[in-house]
Length: 371
Ligand code: F6R
Ligand code: MG
Ligand code: MG
Image (tube, rainbow, N blue to C red; front, side, top):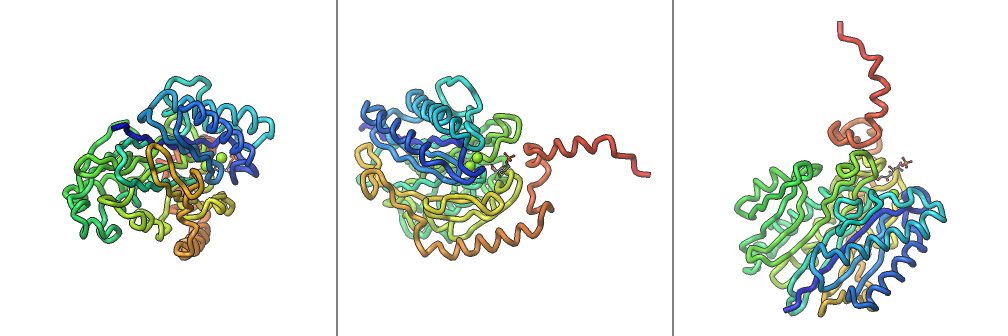
């Protein structure tokens, strides 16, 4: 059976009014290029959207994960949008996430974020795509744990025999570039011991115990690639749902709690993650607070099926998430009352990759030995 691949490849190519949001002309050009790729049968379907200042290309195709043609397509879209829209309009931080001039077969390690999942389509295959702005890949650790390993979130882990034996989590150590596979529920405490350290251990994939691919997340950390501060990674995540996997409602439930994530202003602060509709996927207050959007599709015969064509269901455009948004606003305000004091500001290891070391460098000469 031909397998289907869902790929999300995204980048910050510059934006309007600082880091507020993607410009409509950037989206327009990206859509034209995606339409071309669909006509030439390179991809089966696509949806172009944005979250804050990140341009998101969602595609379905039959070429598998890490396919050089698909990656080149995304890279070409990003360079053309940068050269033909971001630069002429002098959009802010034009081409920010394109950390290399030459494409070498895969966008991983070159700046853009990627999440890809290849799978055999079931009788019906609902998927939810999450996209965040002003945070890092470790931000998915808590919701992924809740969705696939926490029975207080996912009733199916207890009630549904198809979920009852649990899931396998693949965790990446972003510092060492190593992965480890951990089984839940048996090794849940080992998993938590790792993924609680969100800046270092990030969940990259989740499988059902029988090997069925259930989720894929982007894991790149821009600062580690560039060795300097280049904004946050603003990660993306694909989750399959229903019929032997967590239900869509169980997949969305963790976001009713606006938990704290690293990012926000200058990629240097903890802030609550606010679930929003695409219309509200912009950032303002202190360049935030961090946002997350959830788009729903059915995958059918290699295509992303939405409400009209591939226009998805905007799953957080729902009053059920009003409370989370309200709470996020209150937490954002509370965190900001701390100014530059920890824990509102990130710890020293994380601040290494910001502009703070340049400031500390200036004080170097002034230090005197304690008497
Ligand atoms: C966070 C982000 C922004 C900028 C901030 C300063 O990911 O992109 O918060 O860090 O607006 O930007 P510059 O230094 O370009 O003025
Ligand atoms: Mg930006
Ligand atoms: Mg961004």
